[in-house]
Length: 97
Image (cartoon, rainbow, N blue to C red; front, side):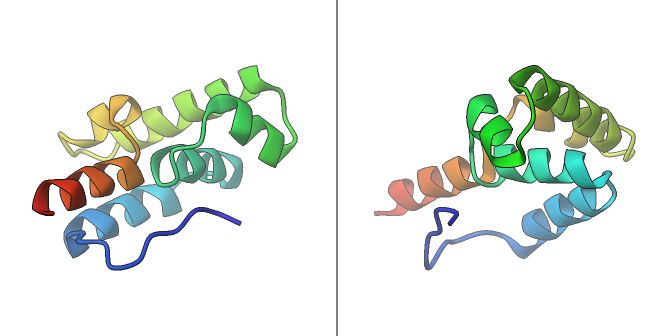
């Protein structure tokens, strides 16, 4: 199962924005995007989970990034290069401890 974390301090607008972007993507893109950006999986891990070649994962992530960038949102263009949501949340939690 996916790694989960309890009591994360996350802004509701950020989560809602990521969910909105993900819902608009085609199913395979959405799965690859979610595994990478929410759970921080590597390309190899995503390929294994989805049963596709690793290069296909990169194509799905490129397609997802393009789909997100079309959302007239300045932050959407940088989503492809940002650390996973889980990694950013962990960083925030560590800063408050």
